[in-house]
Length: 169
Image 1 (cartoon, one colour):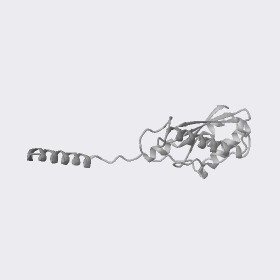
Image 2 (cartoon, helix red, strand yellow):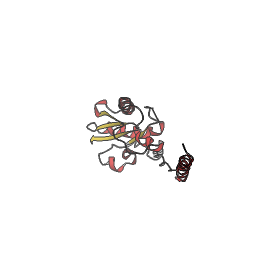
Image 3 (cartoon, one colour):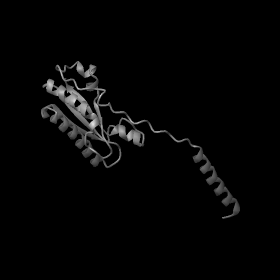
Image 4 (cartoon, one colour):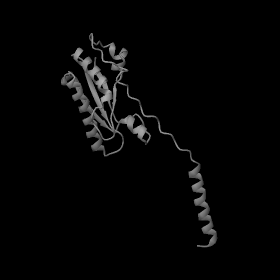
């Protein structure tokens, strides 16, 4: 190589390095906050009605988040699980679908299985609190229905979830 080509290559590398150094770091979105156990106490008296699905803070919370590669229900969601279980006990004709979701990491097959394990974990917790298994259906969407499309931990956390969908109130 002649000296002109070498100088040109070095100049291109310097320009590329300078351009990379000037890029501003993108701040990740904040992690979604879980509802604290004290924010949505379980209704212990009276019977839930379909109107409570929209008016009761605990019943309006219909997303349970999971840690990476885990399918166990975190203790911060115990009151929410108990609240939905009570609704199902109070309303024997009510039906729900639990939609298990994962982040994009892992194979399609693994993520479908993990989404199903997450959905089954929530179903088991609801049944342990008195809901009937016949009222609950579990569906796994794996990574197919993300709520956030960025590729960072904050976004992946939002996608590792179970959605509670009432199909009959």
